[in-house]
Length: 422
Image (cartoon, rainbow, N blue to C red; front, side, top):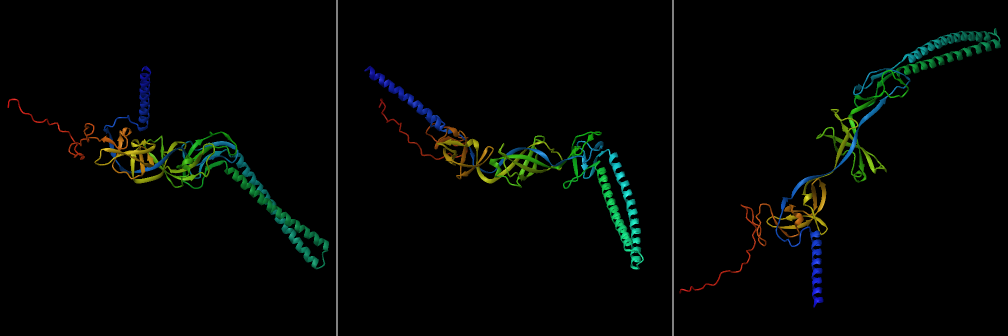
């Protein structure tokens, strides 16, 4: 008998433990405690049609559309520098001057050498003229048999030598003139001008790299010139978004220096390769900076819109729940007080709003209390009065409630009895 009692107790304990385990597993799957089949108070929101956009944010840096360094082409001491950081310069404006004493002397020397060769040219021309007259005279005398053949040959050789000498003198004049031009060009290199092709006629000095009096070699930079009227935002895009980019897309650029303000831009260039180290591609966004508030080197955020869907049904992200491995929402149809679970397929997720592509929804979406619901659960809508279990919720004042069949009640009327005094 004792063994039987012990066996019954053990079976009861095992059953109790098994029930508790089953209860915990069921509660974990359903998201609500077992046995609570009472009406669940919820909040609902009508399904609205809105506009949703698929956007991505990328960080980047601003760089000048055009930037170059001004440097001399010759060696010399920096005698004057006429600009400083932030100064505006015009196309062709004089920016700096080198000491030009040596180069001026070279020009004067080249001019003197030209005068020498020109004098040699005149002498050669005169000699040529004399030699030509002698040759003509010798030829005439030879025809009359007065001069010998040898004397004619000598006159002819002298004439040809004079012609060659005159050609050499002409070549020397050309050579010295070229040397003069080279010396004048080197002299012009001592005056550094800001020159560029295309773009605006006015730019700005970004940096001044040397001071007046410095000894410079050829190509030593003096200052940088920037075009800040047009900027380029450099951003880097991952493989996921690379295929969705195309030239001409509109970009909304913002900078930490100007909170709450945005600047328009356009995708101008997309790199044809993705870097192996970062798995990102370089993208250039063209921006205009008419008021010159943006500066090269600023950190910016670029927002690109990839898709826009207008007048589409959407629900809040907080209303989404999972039941039996499917994502969906609870819908309360007009005039009903039960929530139906509807699996949904989402499209664009825009912040706290998600587009619903399938199915077509109607009614109201449960936005609060949905985690306690199951398909077909009774709900209590805002403004309704709670009632005892088994009764329909009372409608708010001024609104007719839903029609439900009247519950059957047992008769409690006692049979009539006669009084004792009859």
